Image (cartoon, rainbow, N blue to C red; front, side, top):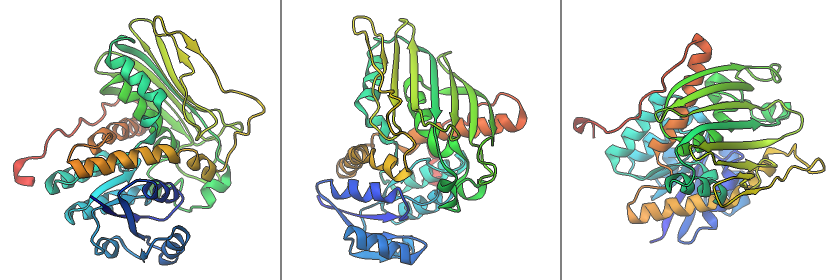
Amino acid sequence: MSLRVGIVGCGRIADNHVRALQQSPGVEVVGCADADPDRAGTFAGRHGIAHAAGSAEELFALGLDACTVCTPHPVHEQIVVAAAEAGIHVLCEKPIAVSVAAADRMIAAADRAGIVFGVLFQRRFWPAARRIKTAIDEGRLGMPVLGEVSALLHRPSSYYSADAWRGRWDTDGGGVLMTQAVHQIDLLQWFMGEPVSVTGSIGTRFHGDHIETEDTASAVVTFASGGTATINATTGVNHNLGNRVTVIGTTGAVASVLEFPEGREGINELWTVPGELAMSTPYDSATPVNLDVEDINAGLTDFHTLQVQDFADAVRTGRPPAVTGRDARTSLAVIEAIYESARTGRPVEPARALVSIPEENR
């Protein structure tokens, strides 16, 4: 079954989407759309796409089976709901939305329409990340009781000035948590389970001349299992140290996945599962690390491709994709709770997961 796919939004990350789609057997990219028709036309010409549209509705009229969504975060809801109502399967960029309420409306629309709805978290496809998840599921790590997210990243002022929507609450929905660390928060909750309490703080310490959202954040998360984890994230370090997610289980074993330089495939830097001791690090002071975001994205293309291929198979077979809308909702709920805790100074319970859609709303 050949899938006719369109791309909504022709910004930077759309390059990864089109490469991943064009590398996937049985997938045809038939069109792209952007609110700026000139950008859509340029993107289509660069990638050999036959149709360029100025709106999602115009793109959907081409008779798509599926679409991927690469628009600014607050527009995700509008596009996903419209695609669902048109009977079009959707793979949406992270974060799923900028509020849990919006995410719930997207999930409800997908449920009513019976479409496949996935959200792109390509780092779940790293072998190193899957190795940790498997060790947890098989009990070799024990119950995860302590975790850590460290996202110590560099973004120059040009990163924000090149796209005027970045770093604004109304057009970006958040800062380092929403745009960068959401990936590691997704892995953390995948490993540790349901988050039930969050205490956090945020600040704008480095990029205040260019953004209004946070460029620095810290949080403590408690999980239903009783485990706890810390989150530290910034885009202000002047030597990009990449991302790390670490989990410690009740066996005493430690497992981590380290992404350094940012955009390179993650490795198990620490692995002390009994009988499997291994430690390694890619850190090297001579390694170029303050990379352009295009280079960071390009390094992740192979894993975009794996997730696109998983999504295409889910569409063909009717099974859930590897990362569903409900899965992606959890990391957003943690981020929303960090923002609320920072505002109130109190612990916040993340919004409870949407379990089912009432029959009358389907």
